[in-house]
Length: 433
Image (cartoon, rainbow, N blue to C red):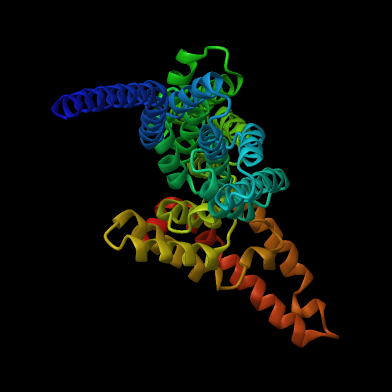
């Protein structure tokens, strides 16, 4: 009986050993078979974490390279298609993005989040096309709405949309905002040629020509044959050269040549109002020196149309109106200038002259009574007086004696004061009046 128990115990233990061996074998097989799956899952997590980090720091090319490599290694990796589609949408590479979204939805049909993003892609794509069309048609405000409220919401990394926005801001004459927007673009890519061009153009229209030149030069160092940059750089260079020539000729007393130079400079860019203000004012001053009052009034008015606070333009227009004998207009302009610069003695002096001229103009026009011009000499005035005195002498006008007497007295008075009027036109007389 004891031998049987001992024998049964050995068999039992042998069975247990075999069972343990089989279990160990199965467990080892499971480990071997599951290890690649675990490794793949861990690798995918690392990939997507790396892609997220790249997107966060705006290294979109690195993120796309990682996703493309992962898809090539495993074409069934659905999430990689979705991630790639999202990045391409943000970059407004819409056709490529659409293909990736559709591939993902083939693998994961009915995914509502992906379907929503695909819908946003279509909205952004249509909005960008609309913005471009509106820009071409000149509706800049509406185009900006499409860019800000749709395109850059769903495609925040879209370089094309950002640059179009800057072009629209420049067209709207919002140069400070254009400078701000190009600053963000150049912070991400300091060698972006179009951003350098547009930022330079914004500074140019603010008449900050030194900074504009530096932007153009930097762009041309990167690409010496860039057409728009070359045109902008040499256009600015020629404008400044022509402006300096006009100023130099005015300073040398070559007034007629200076007029032609100013006109040529103004024709170079009629839209450059910040600089053209300066050109119009220079031209107005030259016209005043030439005694071309009507032309001077026009040029100074051009200045005031750009900036109504330009005191010097008011003064020069006042002087120009004196030349054309618009006494009321001269007084009005010089009064406005004196209110803006109450301490300027030169303006107060000019206003006094204008007021004296206005007072003189309100008297009778003795020259007109004698039928002579204001440039007529005293001897010619004497001849005109004798002729009219004989014509209107009461003894020779018996039938209309009363009218003739009045006319004769008026002619005599005109002759008496003609010397005063001749002298009053000289600067020495006006300054001592």
